[in-house]
Image 1 (cartoon, rainbow, N blue to C red):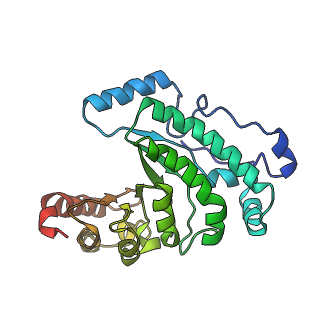
Image 2 (image 1 turned 120 degrees about the vertical axis):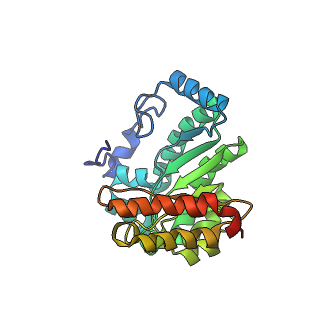
Image 3 (image 1 turned 30 degrees about the vertical axis):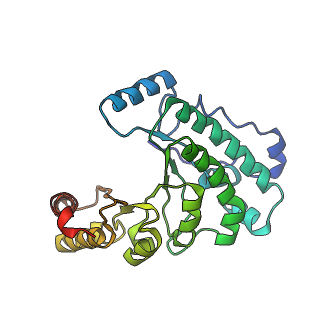
Length: 268
């Protein structure tokens, strides 16, 4: 169950001086219902013994800024270069680093961050503003992970094609591009050979409304275009309650056909 933000504690900048963020090591989150770090460490150790991928989770970054300020307020802050904004970003960065350092102390293979910064056709803010305000925060947090030998998974909806090189430079190892927002050609040009793409299948049209044949072709084209013997491709299929059973079956059949049985045939 996810909560809904109904109020913004920093809707007025006058509250910034007295605002105290919670302790990220004691507060429950979407990823950890109970921040029992001893239990978390034991779980990670058990996964390691089984040879499984171990992962930790940071919290939301850009999204957290507008939870604190309110979306319209934050957009105006960025557009007008409000002088309070760097202080807020620094506060969030320091909060996040405390959490990241705990995961690095435990030792995990990858740390994930979910923060939506893209719209259907472009970023929510200009690339210039992204590089001025958000990129330095990303780089400080993500490079803390990479320097410790831990990969970074950034989950963000929307079209991020304009800043993929920036994300690579910040230390992102893996991103989950939305298919319809970024297009197959866009993902091919921006990601292949640079950044592992966990392609989010088309949830806007093909999976809910397409035919099983369209779904088969959809997955085949993604694999054929983006697959390489060096890796760099993952496919994510989010199954929604509104999808027909025949379309759900088609997704699994195509994934098995193209991602497992015939991956060597598709080659590069």
